[in-house]
Image 1: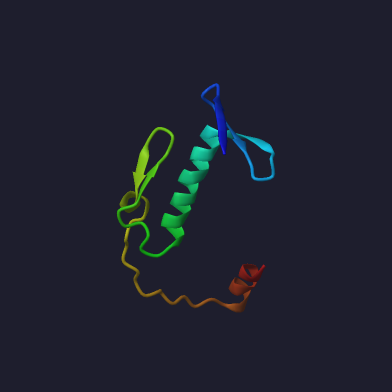
Image 2: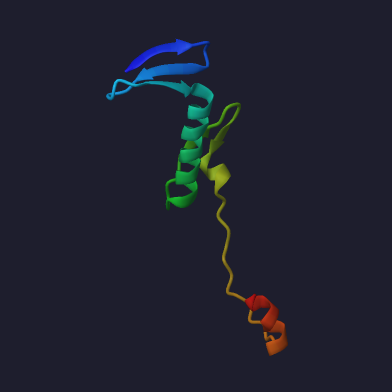
Length: 88
C-alpha cells in the first residue's frame, strides 16, 4: 500500500508484514529500464517494437540489437607451441 511520496524522491510503502519501506523513485525507474533492456538483449525476438525509456533518453529495440551476417569460420593451423599459451 502506498502511503506517501516524500520530497519527490521517495515513495513510502506499507508492506503486508506491516513494515514501512522507502523506495527511491530514481533507482526504481532505472531498475525497470535495466530489466527491459536485459529482456531485449537476452530473449529471442523480444526486441521487436520494444521501447526502453532511460532517465533522459529512450532506446528502441532495433537500435540496441543490430542484425549482422555470420560467415563461416576461417580455419587456422597452429603448432603445439602456439596452442599452449591459449590453454591458460
